[in-house]
Amino acid sequence: MFRSGMRAVLDTQPDLECVAEVSDGIAAVRETARLKPDVAVLDVRMPRLDGLAALEAIRSAPGNRTRVLVLTTYDLDEYLYKALSLGASGFLLKSLPPEELASAVRVAARGDALIDPSVTRRLVARFTATLAPASPPDVPDRLTSREHEVLLLVADALSNAEIAAELHIGEETVKTHVSRVLAKLGLRDRVHAVVYAHRRGLVRR
Image (tube, rainbow, N blue to C red; front, side, top):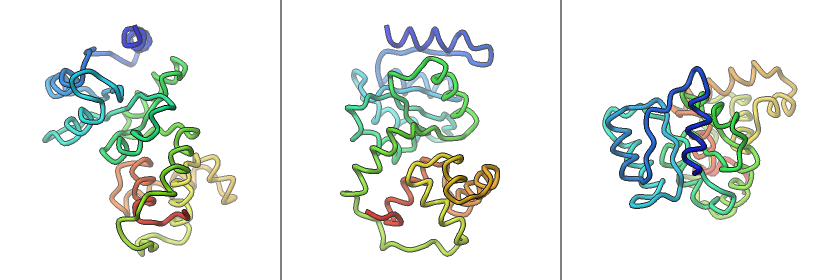
């Protein structure tokens, strides 16, 4: 019923087309490889192959260009960090309004990442206390001091508008800084930037 409801929402959008609907993770991997959709939406809990394993298989497939959004509930926060590490373009709560689902698919299709701020802050609070950095904390010398500030605020799950208010600069300027940070560090998107900052111990624990 939930899957059919999602499809009904997406099929009413003039710019979106749902090309497949499957009932388990193995089928999701198979159909993604066959149809090469712009975006796949995976539930963390799926029969036969769970959403995280399916995500890893999809993202690691040669020539893959499909962006993946992960569906979850508040009770599954511990899985979300792994989803981001595996290359998810964002995650959604199953309780989100229908119009936000369509918006999330559009964001992912553009190559951007979608982070629900409330959930991301919960993740940050949970994982910063336990996550061991992959290397000693340091400031990437490729970044300017302002870019480093922006990276830390992105890692704290602030939106562009919130970063602009924090630094007293324009939102377009924030967007420019974020783009430069991603380019200089070779990161996919904001989600990848959050993972990068926390793995390297760039944020206070």
